[in-house]
Amino acid sequence: MRALQNPRQKYRLRARASGREAFAVAEADGVYVDRETGEEMEPVTRTLPLAPSESALLRTPENLRECRRCDQLIGLDVSDCPYCGLRQPALDQTR
Image (cartoon, rainbow, N blue to C red; front, top):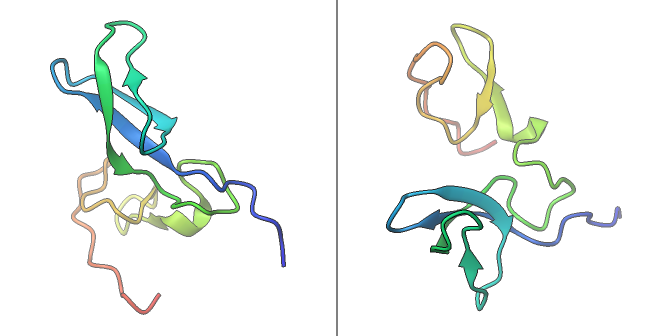
């Protein structure tokens, strides 16, 4: 069994007033402040891969798929290809 390298979860943080966003490892009881505006930021979603994971990268090969039209790599959670705009089919849940 391989040791996990990334036991902590990364989150997308957002400041309510300005809408500014950042990615950071967050804790439930932590307070996060935007360095530039001083606004408090709150976690809005977890990023892929979900912790614990063997990778700390926001996207890893097991979290990507190819667009059917342009063959670019896109995230599994993306509905429309950001490169060509093609709607992607639903994923097979047995994967």
